[in-house]
Length: 219
Image: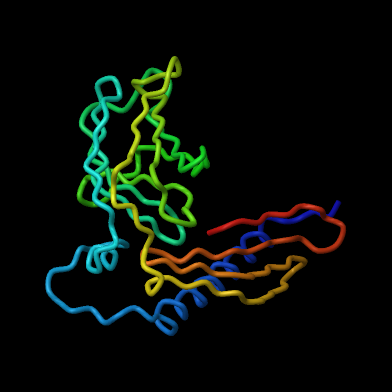
């Protein structure tokens, strides 16, 4: 098996980071089709455009997680992820860990798991899940861990809401074929998904020669 030095890994990581940064900058500044901003007061951060163009879904549904009250205020069904903005009142920590939540769409489709530890600058909690392909009829959240423990989930069902995915004019998919080889590694970037809040890059990193390790996924 081919041995890989930490110096080579670090050097390649910097190259990968630079390549991805260049491509993201091109997408953000050179390929954007978003309407021009109208000015005035803007919400800061990654959700500024989603706020400005009315892409959030208002929720305002709450659940008591055994002493920790979680209120889902709004959500964004972006092309890259499903985001929820929550207000949390109370202690989300238990004896073993903190509060977590799984999200399910129609027909039990799993949309991943999120912790409640990710805070926005305004103090709200950001929950991040996998994206949906179309607006669901309802979403189900199963809270566990923390004060809830593992003896039975606390369930919050989100229904009778005006679910909508982000308007297509704010999103874009790119199929590309960019390859870079350096010091026994090959990086292949084959697609991008640009949402209104972020851009995801689909890549595959492999080691050449007789090394059989593969790392791949979404950034």
